[in-house]
Length: 253
Image (cartoon, rainbow, N blue to C red; front, side):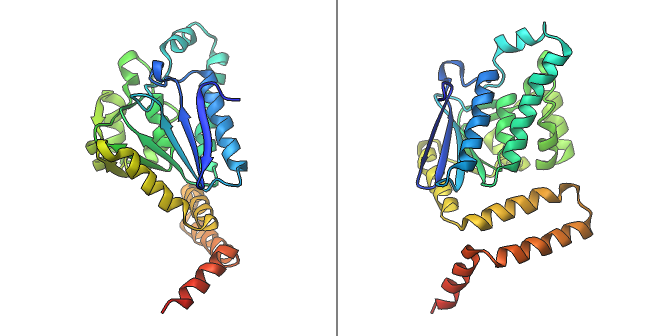
């Protein structure tokens, strides 16, 4: 039973919606825990082929709940490490999820909210969306997400984002490589549905094996990455999805 998110699956898409619109979907311990639970549920959901993550109300996510952040300043180092580790575990679960995880960002995605979007495999943004890591402005650090941000855009671009704390528009985020597609505000929901539906229609095993191989190469040498590719190539050929795909291709006129 979820209180701060909405979870539903239809047409192969597991839809997870951050549901604290009155707080601009600010993150607290309960919401992060529910988000992890929802991701785990989508892994076990036989209908799920793609995960779509969005936010209710006017914003995707405004970052950490300020009341929770103020409380953490009075907590012990061990308590704060436990809370930080919970967020790190969320990012790991998104990375290890067997299906593509897509963020649909409208309004603002700031601080931890921008971190959640960055941790997704693909970011779709409304043209008026804004992104930023303003943590430095209060003496804080976007710490865990740097591991993902550093892999997503150039080192220099990542450095500027985290040390200036400036919000950037969707167009700039797209230019940096953080955002994959920008859709007009008026057609944002319909365009997101069209994009995600096309992805959900692709062979599930191909999506899963591609994601697993790509991310596993981060720490590999060139030779090890090639060998891993050999193994995944052989496995992919043996899947029913591939067999059916080859049959369809050969039957084309």
